[in-house]
Length: 356
Image (cartoon, rainbow, N blue to C red):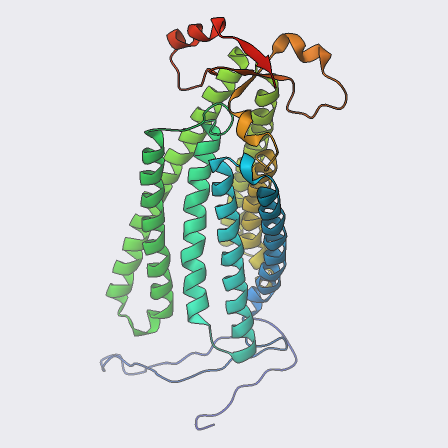
């Protein structure tokens, strides 16, 4: 090498190369060239090595869920409801995201350079996945496919908020990557301006997230109150399970975020080689909620009729052991929906009924 070679084969740890300009009054110095850092496992930085295998394993999990959900949707094709298509689409997004992210890291580890196409495609798909997931949780909380056969004008509001989140998140993530990858070529002033914009976009994302969270919690409470008033115990049980899952997920997210902040400022709780666990834990939290929603709204033979039927409270005691957990239901000529006004519900009392 023209300027020498630095090698370290005995110890692992963090290393830094420092260039100094002793002439304080001179011109700014730009150092260009190519540096290669390689460890025993390859070119990938040590704090990302575990993440590479985590994404690979997560891809297999996503693919298994995608295959299982897709096959059951095909089996009960005539009974599919729209919200199941949203769930399937979200699973597809998650599968593609971890595929491209793991591919990027594997190529980087083997060749010493990033597969930028895979990296940016992974970012874009990841943002789409998060946006669609938030819309999906709002739809689920509103009772789509359980107490509502359609969302009407509310769907447009969900779409607008979802698109806003996706656009702002996409710009923020791409600008963050540009800031870190081009930091060597930027002046300090430009660097500060770019990070200020990223910080503002981050605040916008937090605001949109808060709207989503409060909307989900409020809608979930309203749906559960409606089901309780209508004595729909089997459907209410599904939402009680969903609420427990969401509460656990939120609690875990808050605790883990606090842990991450403490680790950042206290340094030393998590070693440099294990820092990938901080990102992996949040991905596992997301996957946990997605699997739970997919199970609760899994394709079934009577899925389409489920939103159009009412449970008969008087018959609950007569349920046989062979019945599933959906409970005893009766089909009405017109089933009251959570979107109906209270005055409109009275007309159903005189309608003829038939057992399904």
